[in-house]
Length: 465
Ligand SMILES: NC(=O)c1ccc[n+]([C@@H]2O[C@H](COP(=O)([O-])OP(=O)(O)OC[C@H]3O[C@@H](n4cnc5c(N)ncnc54)[C@H](O)[C@@H]3O)[C@@H](O)[C@H]2O)c1
Image (cartoon, rainbow, N blue to C red; front, side):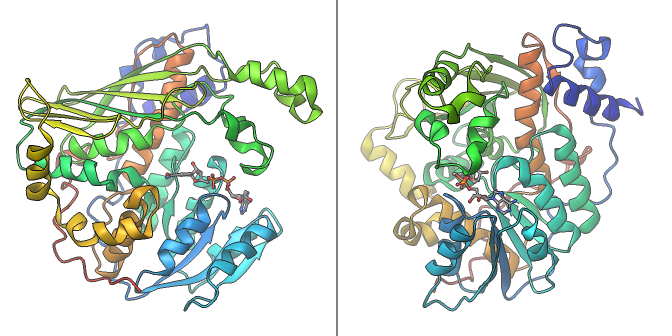
């Protein structure tokens, strides 16, 4: 059993490269033999409260589409000092700096070279590095930042491979620095209302959850300018659920995953690609720019992954960014007494099997069970914006926790586990949807780790400028 994790890592990375497809290794045939659960935990980062920071000094890396919005949101939170901005492209870094003109912030700009971000991480006057770069850079940047004594907030997904997931865990435990995946969907209004209702017992025992990211990104992925250096189109050459965390995060919170329950195993199935290769070929016929993408094997349109937890619950996760389906981030919870469904909107709640609550009854439960964080920050967040306000709630809550010396809601184990769905699904898809064991990044501490606190206890002191 001692070498199990090493085997798991090796096999998963080989599977990711497609090396093993078609030749089933005996260890893979029984994935429970290759669980990563034998790892010993160095230090438990779940529930870990780092020393209080009155002022949170932030450096941002990656200022393309997503990063500048985070800069703007953070700039109005009390106790935030934006010290540095980095993007490989001068114009992006300078544009983000221009957003702060007239504010209390005067960040130094790092740009022009691929490794400039390291200089930002090396500064001694930064507490938090906030990363919104392409996926392949997430773990290298997060690890380097933690090694240099910084807490890290990193965009979704935090890691691309199982090795990277473990690297995040090992570095966070060793350095005692937070590593939080920026899973904004955990902070959406409906998801938090349902979480509070589940905590109050209104849904009974939770038996099943569903989550998804279904968003037609064809135009954006094939745009020459939208994503830096076509990084997102290139990622779609991997076949699996590449973007699992928006759907999974809120379901994981409802099920207390890593905090009382644990994901045990998954299977993953992928449809054919009916659009990406065709689009690449069509574009390449007219424009040499697209020639490197012609006749490539892109991921199939729809991925469906099914997970089973230690307590016998199931989770279905879907991912489709290449068929013309209506946008959906399914959030479905089935309990023994209640259920809910988000998408299509308006969201629904049922407290019996007969009917969804009427508008009037929904309003009553909403008034009664909206959790304190939404009561306090909801209206302000709607004004600030960012996916309807959830982005601001996430950023504000993170800063408020750091300033009050509280654990962050999302820790490195969540960051690793939620991100690991992508490489694990790639493995399962490449092996005819065979089941695969899910590593226990908490090394057993899931049994005693505390639930995410949604009470705002000892918190909520941070104002907005
Ligand atoms: N949570 C959400 O709702 C949400 C929404 C959109 C995007 N995202 C995530 O945000 C991240 C960024 O996405 P995006 O749409 O902004 O992509 P983008 O391509 O617009 O931005 C990435 C930026 O990183 C910069 N970059 C690339 N290499 C760099 C390097 N070596 N050093 C410094 N900067 C470098 C690029 O110049 C670019 O400006 C992704 O991880 C994506 O998944 C999350």
